[in-house]
Image (cartoon, rainbow, N blue to C red; front, side, top):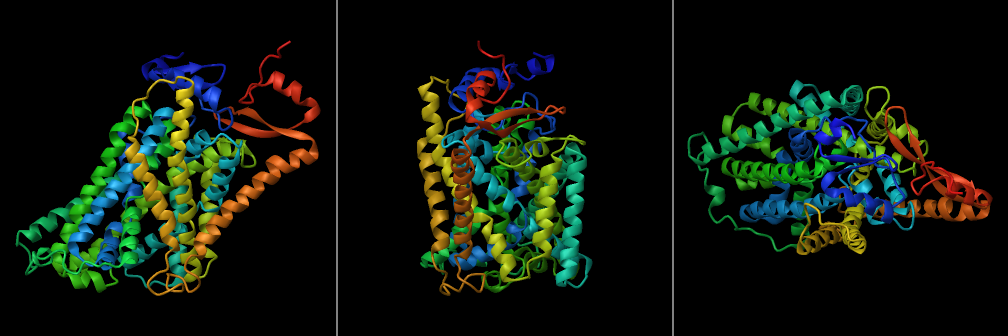
Length: 556
């Protein structure tokens, strides 16, 4: 064991190429005995250890804070009808997110050296049927791994800030250009991409602190706003009893907190990952909640309720106009929103690249060496290139309007399905750990929290099927409102059919079996490759390879 491993409390099992915290050495036995299929645990992260506690905080913050806090307050107020209930919904969203975060934290204590979050956690929770969940998740992750909506939003605000007219193709051109620049930065250097993410995250926090403090000044009566307390008198007046409106508001506020899990995608690049995540992931979520809450207080202090409810402008734009009263302030806001969107997109690119890399390392994607390799810059080049290609296609190819909105909505529904499965899977992991006498870990979520998280997941899966107020054609597309749900489930069904064909039917017809083979790359990366072993040679193969596909001495 190297001095570096000793310094960070890690024990290396050379035979299995595993690395674990010293306090969790028995977990190695658990993973070997209970879950033998899937991606190998890399002894030392080939991507390095550039993720410290500051980066954990800002990776989460940057993904959570995009443009939502500048726009969502108006739509939530419109949905719930009153200022008081609107503020309560931001608290409820925080509780929703905290319950889901507890699920990720418990998984992280069991598997602290597997990046990719859901990729690894689903693999460990559902080892049987072999390769089913990894295949389904990989298909969904690859097909839907684009960031076109973020790029389009960023392009729009950059053009507004520059005073340039917005046309379909100059928006798309700017979107492609900015996204390409971000991907190049990520490819060249993990260290500098993370530093840039931290810097932009800090700008976001400062921006919302400025808005929050300005709101308090407005409440104190020291600005041009005439009656800053108007919206807080009878603050629950106008509360709606419409179930669809309340449900829609919950979905929107839940989406505003999405991203609290981003740092778990890079957990194998964190030294002392369990302690770091346990301490700083909740801190990042709480920081965002406080900023969201006080930003909403600021909006309601400065802007008349009806203006927020009926205007299609940015809520923050109305705030800056009401407080400062000039176009320069609104232009400055456009710059700040563009910066926020830029940071959000960067955080998404970093996190999703690790998700794709882990899918490739599981062996369910072709050419696992390509996905696992960190050549030539010690960065996941293959996943970055895939994400760039898909994002550029989705930015350029679909016509504006229905097609674009449909593609954006399509990304959300399969993700909710996997979130539901991951929460249930935690009970399965617990039961298997208990069956082999695995020790307690540093964090265990309360059962009531898991049940609450499951209820939230069921709600998010059921709500999209409820017809909008305008009927079945009253959604944000001109065709059937739930088409994206049907297509999302269809993608999962196709994944299942592909699994049945490739893993079950073809091997039977071809008289072969599928086995794992451990690939070790020169850069230290490791991946699993699925190979076809003729049944006549199966005994020989099993005698010379362990369960992970690593070559061992033949047992005579």
